[in-house]
Image (cartoon, rainbow, N blue to C red; front, side, top):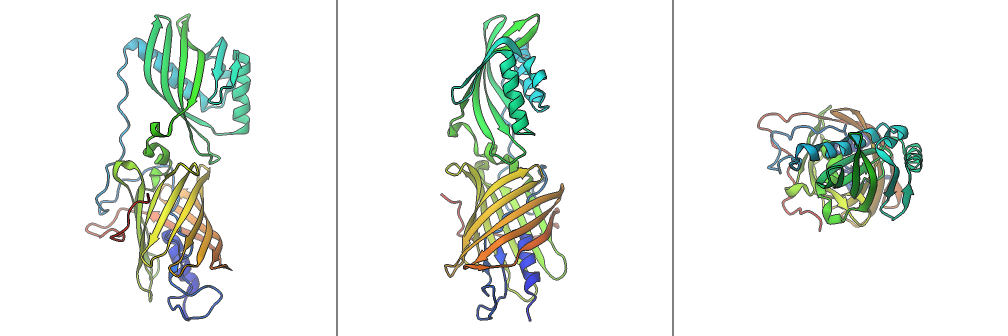
Length: 363
């Protein structure tokens, strides 16, 4: 008799998406008995901290480096620092404190062209946003500071607004008019514009998942599962290779590409396994320590599969995965719960999981 629950759990732990009831396709049972990927199990969620690339990992793109900051004169830097201080204050969700960054007659125009006029109205607008979306985080990058007069400056840049609720980050261009009064710079006008897709580098869309980079293992019992995550060229995708060796079963492996899908406006993954199955998953961050992946796939024999994967951060180097709502070929499959993988440096000289030779990034 085969240890079906063990096999299912091990493959879920690998994040490979393999749903194994038996390696014998003729063996009867309520779950289709074929060693194939049910839904493409996604990479484990892990803490928001990037690990050093695995020493034995395949050759990979260097870790993304932040763009060089513009060179500002001391006068320009004072203006740019005001934008930075505003972004920092935004994270405190203190609308009253934010109001101090505006003139009494400030005008704020959002990407839809809606205007909010006056310091009081602007403060109320932000207060409402903070109440509706707790945990908002604003990051602003100043690209240019131009002085119209010594006390009036035009500032151009780009902002990223993210939420712990898991909504996709919003990228906007901004153009602000700042005036200096009593030695203090304040915003008299802010205009926001939706950033064109070409303005947002792929890495900016994916850096929420940068913590995935590294070597992940589970070597409990007689089973051994490994996964390596690295950046693709130009940091356009995350590439995840994995393999699983379970006692009494043939090795299984696969390759996953994780990138930004502009059609769905979400992070998306494409998974290809060594048995010929494939699948996709849409990623949503539900809070600071949790990601949910809605996955669906196709087995080699054409049967459809689907599952919901919940990845919960336990600490900076371990993550728990639950795979629920699993359907294989129209039949309900058992949930896979409380599966944990840990990040470790690979042993010196150990070979990293190898992707299938023909696997390419999705077009």
